[in-house]
Figure 1 (tube, rainbow, N blue to C red):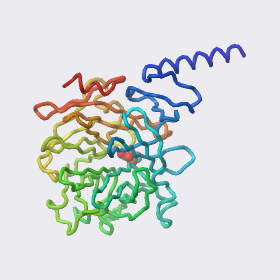
Figure 2 (cartoon, protein in one colour):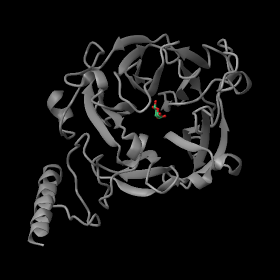
Figure 3 (cartoon, rainbow, N blue to C red):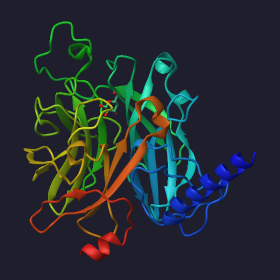
Figure 4 (cartoon, rainbow, N blue to C red):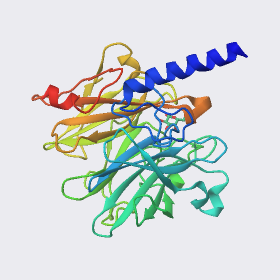
Length: 363
Ligand code: GAL
């Protein structure tokens, strides 16, 4: 009995030491008290405001007024993956708003066998709608379609609109293609959304069975590709045959950037970044932005999003997932800061913990 009590005290005090490094207040251990974080701690569990590890894997963030909304895969054990929405004013403390798109919102004819990966949301000012795109998949990863859903509020509920393969293009389909690309169009797997300064939106995704990245301009509503769809005018192929996935596009001044990963499933590999004057390309590959120990494994993570830091031109947060395939709910978030230099290049280095003052000190 005594031993159990002292073990509990020890674990509690270790927990508090770690927590106190990150937070302004002492944490409760029950997971019900408010925790106030003031640092990012890449690779640690990241409690939401109720103390539960955030479920927003493969996610992305939008800023509306002074509130950030973080969407991602809700891998809570026992439930089929839905899309969660968290809100924050400071990027450290996240409140679980809702499951913005529960799995049950998928269409009945595909629901049972279909799962959701890497959801992203953008806001369309002309329709007033929040538009969600996601990778819809089935066992074997041959379904490979885009799912689109609409919401009136950031936290939803979102209504499922449609699923599709956005582009039909004959890149030389293989016979007996398990992805059935001749019939349905090029596969849609790891994906992202990007809204340009002119208000036009794009989806970036790994297509052609992941061999080639597609960049496709969306229609005015952001709900489908712009039509008529014309190669190198409304869409383009990039990194042809290079097997790049996990696209995280962003822009600085007049240049477009993208960080992506290689294709090794849940296992980490080296990131790469590329730059372009035109969003549809040509893209110039610049190499691995990560430096230091485990840089060749992206610090054991895979890109999902790049968040521009509001009010700090050239300052970004690299967001990545450190996947735990057998316990996806326990996958960790790797958020690291970077700043684009005067020559347009940047590096990303590991930090055990950091806060937003990083960007003040470095500028
Ligand atoms: C990765 C991809 C993840 C997930 C995983 C499944 O390549 O980035 O989002 O699809 O494969 O193996």
